Length: 541
Ligand code: G
Ligand code: G
Ligand code: MN
Image: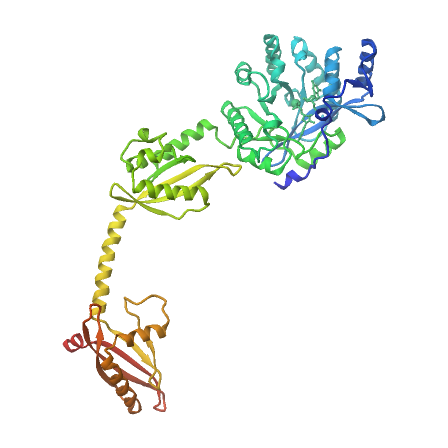
């Protein structure tokens, strides 16, 4: 993505900014001049190179590699003043000079670009009226051959609106160009008249998304959806898509996520003179082809891939929109609700569930819409246990569009776990009835270790455990045992005593506690190691 930063936006857009200014040529209003005078000035501006080709790069959105250039006519008038194309193009059209401009632009740009390395294309804008002359493809080809630039790297851009009048003639011209290997792009797609009919009427090779759907699409979900739809349309029809007017990294990154292969705009570079374009060729590197492979499957393919994934999944799958309506469910999910997927699709959870499950699920789902991560939930539906994984789904711009649910039937596992719990409780009970506890004491008789019981709290501090043990001893025995023990210490011989230990339920169990002194080489006590066990069991053994 760092590549995007290379070509910094430098240009302003005079054509769009000065739209209300009167037509003017070389700084003077065209009003009051004779047509002949104006035509002569326009003619000389073309022939003496005051109108010149600016090269704007079109790059692969993912890699930043150069795919080609769009040639934009620029008029630098006396004193370095720029006359916007929106002003002079209509004049050239009116005075029948637009073909002269195109020829001059081809001559100049192709002759220069011919020797640059790479296989980048060059695209020219063609005015509507130019398509109405049958011989147009012939002179275009002648200019191209003369300039020595390969015809298959030549492209032309036509706006949708340009095809409105005398369409049959225009289409005949386009078909002829296509048969000569000139790729025809549809420019400013989405702004013109009846775009989809155009796509059907002629096999365009490129589709340029108008900048109005691109600029700010990171902040506007509406633009994003339109851009996504146009990109999907291009993918479905196998037409390369170019996003125009890309100005920020954010826009580029979203376009890339949407699967748009090519981009054009100030982020990648504004229109520049030939010598600067030459540097771009070195700086940006050329991709292998000007049409990167469509790695993102067409929406058509994606749909069918998703469908088969959905159906083959060993888990229940469901996509809910933000109104908690079932947009798509698989058979397993439907089965969980005791219905067919057909019966559930389109319905809200309120329409397919009842309380208390509905209440529980609604709470889980509403929380999931607000939070990024939702813990796994357990839900009981029709006396079966399910684990429900909920994930909020956001579009590439971060807008929440729904929830994805995965459900796993854990009834059998729960059954096994319940059994384990039962046997665990049984074991705990046994351990309590028949405990064998290890303990240890320092040479002075202070007990500083007692082994845990199954019923003990995990991670509990040792002193707490010891205190709890003392609290279980019958109060009458506690003082006696302590006295016996302290009196016994100096003997340095095995110790044995009995006491009553409280059981849950209020009974007492008679226990025996024994201890052995552990001695060092001088016969001094290092530790006392003891064992407590029920007297009955002990005696029986
Ligand atoms: O960058 P810019 O301001 O150049 O473009 C303004 C408009 O002028 C755009 O719609 C562009 O397509 C058009 N334009 C630029 N160069 C040419 C050209 O050589 N021929 C035609 N017909 N239109 C052009
Ligand atoms: O109509 P067409 O797409 O041919 O015109 C291209 C126009 O868009 C030119 O006027 C060109 O200068 C302008 N342009 C190119 N890149 C950008 C951009 O990133 N932002 C804006 N605002 N205009 C751009
Ligand atoms: Mn264009």
